[in-house]
Image (cartoon, one colour):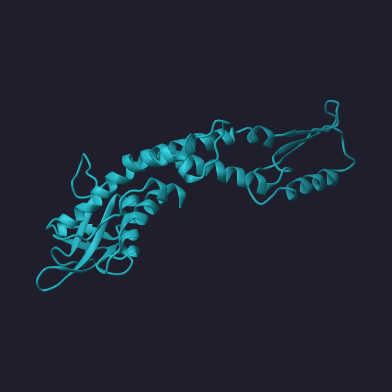
Length: 270
């Protein structure tokens, strides 16, 4: 997503009517929500004086065709003037008012990646001493000794996540004290495989070549020629987005968005 935004912004030609900052905000909102909005200020003759990006999160389309700024934390919706808002979005198969992000299919992979990372963070924060069964079969002198040992086990636990179990069986089987680590079982959670698989699903969802994102390959052969990957990425992903964004020109009736000619050398060698 950030890669697409950066490439589009680098190719965009800013003007007095649409700044690079507003264009970048337009693209960011479009890539996240698949809905991009520009608020257009017009002269009395109808020509565009200034175009500023609006937050897709708070912009809604009404049944009358007008657009509204909806922020439930700061009062009632604000209605824009007719033809003041320009919307750009990809079509959806169930409705024609808003776009639906393509990356939604990879949300489960994102959540799995997050869960694996948070689990591993908690595992290390909790400490290697946590998460075991302390089995004591030798009879202690007094019950106070048992309670003291139980308190020591309880206090050894880290900040969070694994609980320790103290088991006292007087006159039990031989071997005295046994430590049965549970955390070792939990540690074998295929962390790296989960990270790699979820990463690949996210890349597929966003359709961005891994070498363009600085990802280190797992094999010795690498990901292939980065220039060829950049060229395919441009024609398959960036160029269609440029055409979609340039439809704004037809909606406002004049040239508002223009791009520099694509240069493979400039993208890969800059």
